Length: 197
Image (cartoon, rainbow, N blue to C red; front, side, top):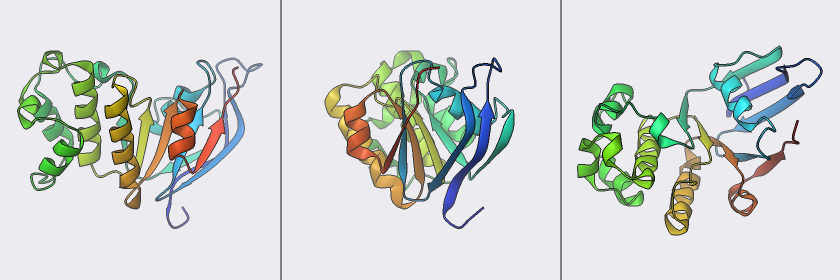
């Protein structure tokens, strides 16, 4: 893979029904420091692309090369196991000492440290989504796949969270799914519009 490219999609073809391809010879290069938004209505193939990138779906044709990935999903309740504390689930996936950077990230995400010792059902949707973002950032990804990250947040926190994500672009690249075209225009280097299939 070329230097500084963290995601390379070449000639991707994928369909559930052959007569209705979702992607046909689709290409995408995402470089370190870049934020590309995938924009489109429900059913246009946005989430399908993420599933192809992480490998839960396989392309019919074409190749996908990527660096190490972290994921931030729209529904944080599906991102955490219900019976373990947030800190236990962070420790399961973050294989290094992160105590030094934790206070700064907690402050930027407006999270109290004691919330990390609670179980997911004890937190609000907004708090849990910010914990999901925290976990993803602590994994130090080269590629961050972000699916509607602010849908559970109020407008002020949503803006702060997006500012934080954009500030990380020195060290990684972001592929963002959003229905919010104003947010996409504000933060994106490039917007790819998908048509409804």
